[in-house]
Structure formats: structure tokens, C-alpha cells
Image 1 (cartoon, rainbow, N blue to C red):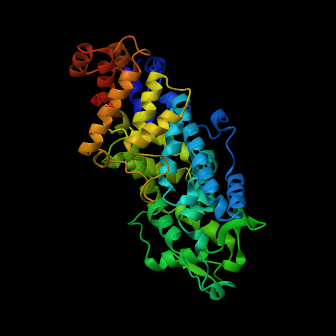
Image 2: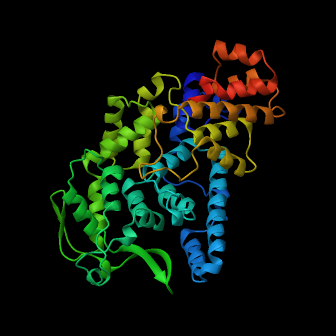
Image 3: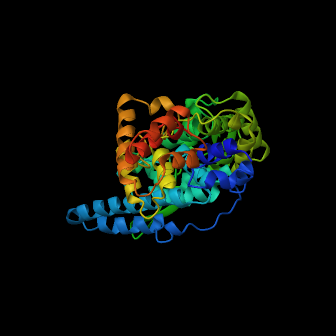
Length: 438
């Protein structure tokens, strides 16, 4: 039995331990993780009543047709849709029996980030993760990236919806040209990386290939992906030295080629190692993960297995600082707050990481220094104190509770927890270095 490895499995790879979890998986922590990486996963009941993005878009567009008098109603619907989606997402993090898989969903969702900084994205963000990310989290990255590229949330967020070929059938009439935003981020953030060997000319050519990738309209209402040949830039294009013919299929081809470029494997491996192992990713781990990605032709399940097999992931105890979302999810799992996701949503908002509100297409930062400002630390302590006061009836023995969900407490933490009131003791467990890291 390996309590230490079980502690790493549930915290570093998962979303935090529930009472009894560490003892339960201690016989085979790595097998427990790999067992969550099957291509298909059972339906998530918390999502059963949520609407697909196309239905939400149609409802909002119908309200838009009503003019200024229904603007407030439309805005309220966007807010309500977002709140319901995110509360369900918070609840899944607490209840899931596959926390490693759930963490992978959040990792890839952050890698291919959309943000509510664009108001229209607010009502589509949850559906974007459910429709474009979750189905492929243990499948092929090529399929995930293509689904992301074609999803209304991404088309709106990075402006590909606005991109019109200058020489297309509608370009000269509307005097609207290329929008390079998505093409740039597709190369810089999603695949090759900033040092991936592409040029500004490659970005322009890629933007031309992706003209016409937009959203279908029915009776003037946006529904889902549609290729509009009238907006597509005619003629052949060249990206990274390869020639692509005119038409929608060239977009699929260039995405496929970007996925299987060596620079993409290196970028993704580096980000996975940073997220799951250390802020400064061990080079040998990066190489192993990149090799698995390449040899499996971008199979994310196989890539995640290679991550689990990295010795570096198991050499040190918990070193990664929990983000606010991690902190809230792990606290709720530990204390059994699994009946309503709204309080968890309010907590992540209070701590500064409201889902799908990253300040840029880079997504949320994944290094401790980005989350360790003096004000942020104080906010975490105050939040822990509040949770401690609200949770005294749930926990009989704070020391035993801490050892159950963390494997063990340091002598300093154990001594401090044992010497104060129950509410303060719970707050100390939650604010301890052991609990704040994963």
C-alpha cells in the first residue's frame, strides 16, 4: 500500500480527496488513474437538463428580434444560462468518480480557452466545454481542435465569424477583410507555440483558409457551424511551405497538419507537465509525453497514460499551488458539499477565478506566482475561516479529517490544529500548506 502515491493521485492528478479516498485507492493509485482514461465515459446526469448551444443561440436571437424593449430580458437570459451551466459544472467536480478525467477536461478547456469577456460567449461557454472538449478528452486532439474551431463560442470569441476573404464574392461589397485573430491563436496558443517556426505570412494564409468558417443561420437566426463559400477567399494558399487548395476541406487539412507538427507535441507536453508535475516542467517528462503524443497520432488518452507513467510526477510531494477553482473543488469534496453548485460558483468568483473569464485567449495562468499576491493570500485565509465556521457540524475531529484527506499532516500543522477551536482548526487545515498545494 502506498499512502504517499495515493495522496499524489487524488490531489495532483485529481480534484482532491473525499473522506476515505486515499485509503481506498492506495493499493493501486496509478491503476485508478488509468482506469479513468477510456475513450467513452458515461453520461453526466448533472448536465442532462442543459440545452445544446444551438438551442440557446436560437432563443437569444429570437429575443434580439424583439428590439430594445427585450434587451434586458436577453441579457438576463444570458446571465441565467451561464449561472445554471457553471453551477452544474461545479457540482460535477464535487461528485465525479473520475476526477482525473475531469481535471483533464478543465485542462483542455483552458488550453482552448473562450472567455465571457465577449458577452455573447457567456451563454455558450458551458455548452462549448460539453460539446467541443469533453467528447474528445481521451480521444484524438485533432477532433477536439476541429470541434473547437467550428464551435459558435470560438467562432465568436476569436472573431473568425467576422473574417471575409478580400477577394471573395462578398468581400468587396461589404469592405470587410481578413480577421487574423483566430488564425494567430490557433498557431501561437493551440498548436505550434510562439516559437513554432511560423511567420506572419503563414498567419495571413491560414486566416484566408479559414474564411467562410461561420455559423449557420435559419430565418436569420444563428444555429451552428456552416461553411459559407461566398465569404471564402478564392485560390490556393500556402502555410508552412505546404500548398492548400481553395475550399472548406483545406481548413480540416491544415488543422490536421498543425496537430501533427513536432512543435505542437512539444507545446502540449510542456503544458501538461507544467500542470501536473511542476511549474518548471522536468525536460525528461516533457520528452516522454511528447513522444507518446507523436507515436499515438495525438491520442490524448495515451498521452495522459504517459503522463501518469512519468517518474517525475511521483518523486516529490505536493508542489503545485491550487488555483482558486482547485481550492474550492477540493474543499467541497473533502467536506461533502455536493447538493448545490451555486455556493461553489460564488466562492470561485470571490477568490478570483470565475469559470470562463480568463483575461486573454491564453487562459488561466498555471504557475504559482500568478496566484500568490498578498491580497490573494489574505483572501484565501479569510475564505478558509468562513468555511471553517460553516462546517463545524460536518467534522467531528479536525486532526483526523486532515489526515484522512491529506494522507498526513506536518507536525507544525497537526500541533496548531489540535490546539484551537473546531472552526479555527478546520480553517487551519484548509489554509495549511499541505491543503493549498496539489
